[in-house]
Image (cartoon, rainbow, N blue to C red):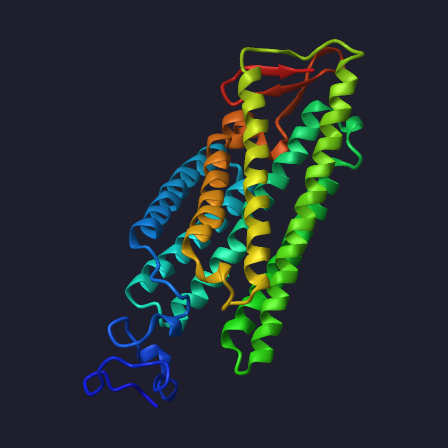
Length: 318
């Protein structure tokens, strides 16, 4: 039955069940019947929307300038999904009862960080080539292929689960969708954990090797390159914290306490992804590798040295 807004006053939980929830507004329906049990903040969600839109513009400029196409595609995909997701949350501020904005926000913001982690995985392969493939457990390309495949698998699970959960006709179907989403997010956490361990292992091997051979001879851009590494680490940590939060959030289902509290969401979801996105912008590989990103930007130096030509034209030699 469709809700007649002109003939009914404020509705109660007892008489709302006969009506289409999409016809509700905050003026006549209890907030408990909304898609989330709060009115999403207009200022907070609009702020995140503006930040991601600005970062998207910057990445389009840098990606075209430096031709970092793989990194460009991953970052832009994630930022576009973040923009769509927060635009849906802004719409929910005006009517939190509508199912379509909720579904858009849920799926887009759930899967967007998968694209950001793919960009980080692409950077690791170049870093390994710079320091030396002999210090890694696997070939640089293997890291990229394995972890991007993990990202794709996680992406499919999260998107499928979100769609099933919000379009389900029975509670059991809805719970099945939530469980699939949790599996996707948990798999993402597991793959990020493995990624972090392999990165730590590589860094430790490099550090040990530097104790028995001449230190890196680099130009004044050494600090810039190390800043690039720290920014990637910060982005990885932020996405890891966010993914752990989303697993905990969905454990209680859409009606759970975490799923219906905006402050934890805005901090542990929104702010963490903003930190990751800003880090990946400040540490854009084009600013480090220049236009030779596609070839890992390695040039054979004299005496068989590996020499990295930085984005500012200086050299990083080992």
